[in-house]
Each structure stands twice: as structure tokens, then as C-alpha cells.
Length: 264
Ligand code: PT1
Image (cartoon, rainbow, N blue to C red; front, side, top):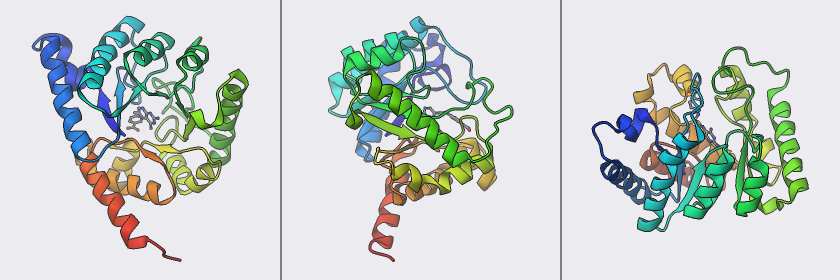
């Protein structure tokens, strides 16, 4: 899964120097490079969920995301996912051709569960402690793996009760979302327990603070650490890897897969 952030700090440029058409062209070009590097899903998001990020309006999110989904859908065959917690965005994205809903808030926003259900699309449910604005202030767990896992199972139960089917759901431990480095590492080492639920597991660690803390590198030098972590996640059984650097991640996954195949 390739990350396509449609935010002011990426393709957006505040809309001052680029017309919409030029902006879309840049996204299409970038998407093309991700697809030829081996990604099968394009994850389009208009709201930043990095630590400290603040919320945006529904209108703003729609304006960022919908034209991009329409353009991607017109140009490529790839599966498009929409990274959103907003009911209106889920509905309009589905109408524009998105095939997966990726919600960091696990359909907890008012009306999101109903909207997602109405689209009929599969959904990725993610764990977060707190909100993006405050989540890194003081995350607390006594047993991070068990707590994150049982919280996700509660969300699964809510979805199944509302009418989703089991094969419509994927789960994500939410690396970096209200977790210290120690929490993230413990969670990562416990990935197999998430895989054992039988639900496809999505892992997103690309360029995150935890990679910086482990390697001591700034964000623009986290490609190797991120690709390694993604490949290890795949070897633990993760089904979907949400990444910035598709080519490097693909190579890392292929190396681990090939060289550890059939090992005891
Ligand atoms: C994720 C994810 C996501 N991450 C899913 N969707 C982000 N399903 C956006 C940091 O610590 O892991 N899974 N959508 C990006 N969010 C973050 C969080 C970015 C933490 C950076 C950090 O640096």
C-alpha cells in the first residue's frame, strides 16, 4: 500500500503556485511510480495524523481527496483506499471509485460506522490511544499487546453487530498512535498474536518517529530502517504494508521471503 498524502506539506503547495490540474498531474506521476515499483493499493489521505496534527474541515478534506481519487481511478487499475474518519468522505470516495476504507479512528466518529457499512467496502480498523493532537503526551498501558488486541476485537464486534461481515475487516495495531518507543517495539514483537486472529493485518511504520528513535536518523534518512521493519512485519505475517518507499520495501520483503523460506 503506497501512501499518497494530499496535504499542504506534500503535493498541495497551498494551491498558490499550482493549479488543480498541475497538482493532480504530480499526484498521478507519483502514483505511477509507486505502481511500477510494485504497490497494489494507493492510500489517499487528506488529513494529517502525525503527532501534533490538528483536524481539518469536512469540506477541506473532500476538496483534497475526491478529485485525486477520481483522477487515479480514471487513469489506473489499482485498488484505491481512502484514509479517512469522516462519513461524508467515505461515501463520496466510494462513489468516486475507492475500494477500501482505512480509518485510523476505527469508525468511531459520529455516523462513520453507518456510512462505511452503506458503501459495502472493506474497512481497516486501527488502534489509537488519544487523538493525533495529544496522543504522544503520555501514553500508558500495562500490557500493550493484550490491550491493543482486545480493543481492536471490541471494534470488530461493534462492526459485526452493525452488519459487516468478517471478510470485510482488516486490523492495524496503529504504530506511533499513542505509543512510546517501548510500546511500539513490544507491539511489533507481538505482531504474530494479531496475525493469529485470522484478520488481515496492516502495518504502517514508514518514516515514523519509532524508526528515527531506533536508527538515530531524521525523517529523510529513514528509508532503510522503514523497509527493514516492513519486511520483518511481512515475515511475521502482516498482509498489508503501508509505505512511502515502495521499491525499497519490495526489495526488502523479497530478500527476507527468499532467504528465510522453509527455515526452522
Ligand atoms: C497507520 C497510519 C495510517 N499512519 C493506518 N493508517 C498514518 N491504517 C496515517 C510518527 O510517530 O499506521 N495505519 N494513516 C500516519 N500517522 C503517523 C503517526 C505518522 C505517527 C507519523 C508518526 O512519526
